[in-house]
Image (cartoon, rainbow, N blue to C red; front, side, top):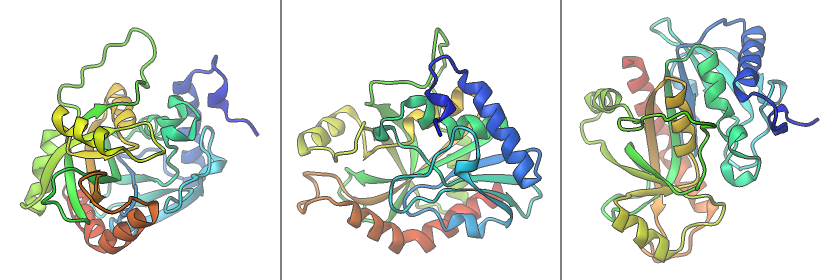
Length: 273
């Protein structure tokens, strides 16, 4: 079965509306307030933020497909928060490096906006450039550099990204943990890891974290009028700073070790939103 977003004539926002309608039908929840994409190491937060009222197989929703990366799940969950708000947790993340195009990469974010969500929380696992960060360190994203050479925005729609990552939400996060550091996240195309020379380039450009997601999604969220919070789990030091070879197994291992702590942190922050 082909994905409707593969049709170049299709309107991605209309498909997002169809997806939102399907989510409402399958979950029984007409509208959501907050949306989360939980990357490597963050998945347990979905179990801690509230009561799951429905869980849907993402492949049953227009425009979604099963994730190809180990550590990601193919479910969409509707969660009732203690505050009475509704959270939509997107487990089916399509990465840009999968080659499906930017429309499918940001479809989850656009669908979340179509469900009514006003806040988008994007999380990921990343390589760190600050050598005093230990593996397992959660870092607030203050800004990003997009090195994919692509954008989810189509046509002459000039979206301002000056304050893309919400200062309000970063400050709120520090009321939960005052030790939280922040940094600039740099999205590469992937799926290969960065070279030591590329990491040094990023360092000189003002980047602190390197990865293969989030930036394109954040742009799409801003285009949709959402308030964005970005959280990165520093799973390892980046190439050339870390002296040993990089591996996805290492990312998963660091994420698994940090998961209980960072998931509890994120749940406590969400309780304050």
